Length: 277
Image (cartoon, rainbow, N blue to C red; front, side, top):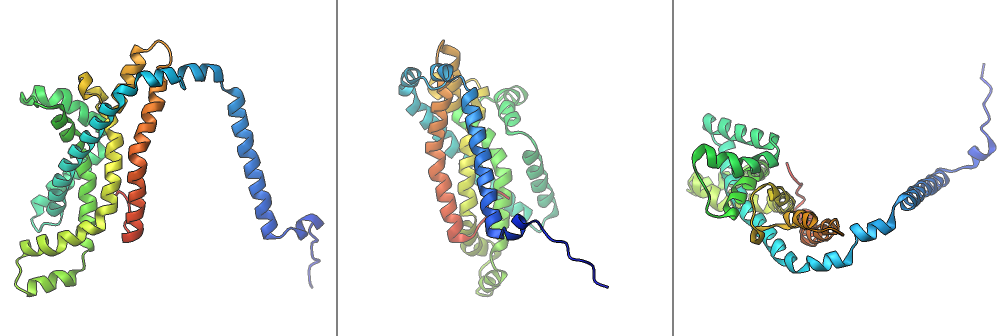
């Protein structure tokens, strides 16, 4: 015995999947516009112009921006130099046949991937000098070590994945030609792995650029201010329009990171690599 068919409402029966998709998009756009209008209506634009988008305040800090941006780039590159060198050593240790090396490298990676970078920065600024009676002659060295050892934990995993991605057949072919394991690693494995991990390494530079904002907790002189520290000092010293400094500094960060991000995406398309491991 067949059950009677249930008739759908005429309007719903006539609506095709394409039509439903169009209606869904219209509803989403309407909700988005409503949210934007609600935010715009609830914003105190006169106060925003005075405190956040103050052109006079932006002009007053313009002469300090080039040095702060240059310091940010210098801290980033120096930290990346430490991170890459240490990360490569850790990656090789994780691939070593010596169990102790693998344990030490794994412990390092897990520890520094689990600890906030700000704590490491504070440790190098205040705890390390007290504990070991060591004072670094350059603030750049201190920042490079603090941020570099954290970034090395991420780069180690990226480099390890790249080293393991090199086909074993090429390693066996190199060994059959009489190359030692060290020669094979230097001449065959590392160059090919470097090509594979180039996109995520570029992405790590972007992340390090933003991580330089953490050094505001260190005792920096005016000549060593990076962008975020400059914004904080401008806010503290300005009676009006101090918040504009964060808008200006944010734009400078974007001028640095957007080209790097575009380079990362281009390299990922060329090599098919992924981001942070």
